[in-house]
Length: 383
Image (cartoon, rainbow, N blue to C red; front, side, top):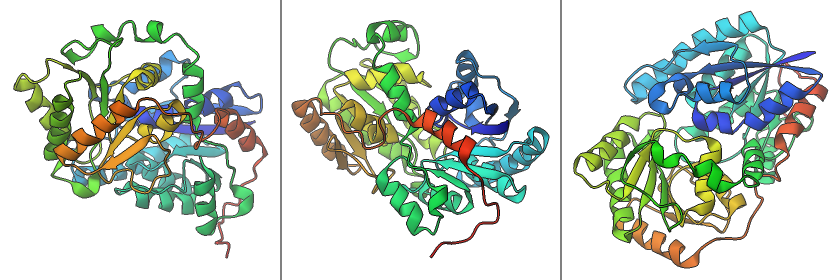
């Protein structure tokens, strides 16, 4: 039986691999190991680890690795600390495969630890292009990985161009779409029923038009996050619609965005905005289904948004060049441009579904491919 170790480092990280974890856990030929670390363990990012356990998974190891500060310096040091702790963890768990997700700093730490210990690495969501340091990390991880699970045809083609073996590339789609497909079949009223009792800020009626905001720092634009989030909040305010706003992730620059949001609330401008540190994936998906427009720079607008048909205003460079559907309008950080784009999306309304990132079967396909694949630990570039 193969031991498959999945490393979870954040709320987005977990939603991007949950369906595969369930399929691995249920597969008779596989044994799931779960390592939780980075912001997934921290209360100020929603204690994602508690959600993981409520979903029926056992946490085999917890790794506290986040150094306070959310600056480029602390981000680099956190990566180094994660590398040290993950190496010890892998030595204890002795997995046959380590599964790492996407392109964050904990992904880099996971990758290096597995590589130096000659443990086969499976990588999901590789081959994509975006802005920020994530672009470099994602392609670097591709060059370390022994098994690739790209989410789209464009991403799979790019992995081939990076010199990876055809036998190691499995186009499976994005596991996040698996969750979206299942969640959309649930009763949205039941899922959203308790939302008003959480978070802080003014009331938002979910049976009336509202905006959903999710904006994260761009590490290569460190120092301007407060200015950027203020422009976004001002644009949303100018539309006259209430909004549900999510706190940023833990990347360098997070404190700048958080400061801008705190100042907004301290000025009393949140009477029609409600703020949340973290939301369960089911809640977030049903909000995406109901919202008049998703505003910010989250990849969810690109991935889940295309599948759900959510009108999206994508701000800034964080998702530059990522494959997207007709539901997305791209703008810079100008308050006026953001407002105009939101109004265009409000006038347009819902979009048809575009399954760019899969059909909702990625998790099961990942588990099955893990049983079949034989890794070539010593990698070679294919010309």
